[in-house]
Image 1 (cartoon, rainbow, N blue to C red):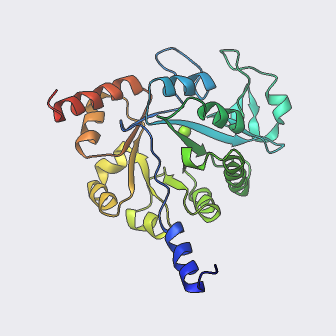
Image 2: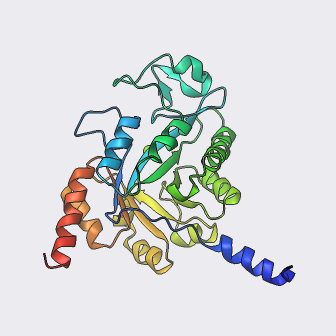
Length: 267
Ligand code: MG
């Protein structure tokens, strides 16, 4: 059966109008670079990701950078073992192990590990801007989308970035991808106009622009704040009805959320 063209067009528009809804744990807790602090694991290690999954955190965040030979690796700083990641090959970099003996994880390794025995934790992919050439950051984003597609884990990932061009490229490649902007210099209206799914701003940005909280909610956009490590700040954000809070202290936030959920259900 052939569908009339206008029906196909309406279907196509509807299918790319809104981001995917992911079905993971409902505890607002995004472990920042995995859950590393309590067990002194290396940040961004697969061990820290596994710990976040074991805690059933709603998300585990990690940082993606691209090597000279265009392998995507997981590391926060632009340098790894004193080498600039973008100027070295993966073979060169991976001669140095993480402190727990793991090899430097690739994005593929990380997504595979995050897809095993995991029904709780979305994988929050931060694509870092290039320190060498802005276009290389966008190139890394294109490769990240390709890796996610290749592993068929679109329904597990959220993309975040400080570089707006990176998020716009991801949105163009995959209009249903969930994208959240980190820098805090765009209004909710600007994000919405560009098809970005939500804000993931530093806590101080929301304190300075409290009106943005209501606006983002009204527009059905995702409200996320980083990096929130005190119970006082966590409680303020929970009072404001944030969807997600990114923290180095996932155990503490899980406890704060649990206290509220128990109070709400009268237990
Ligand atoms: Mg990060």
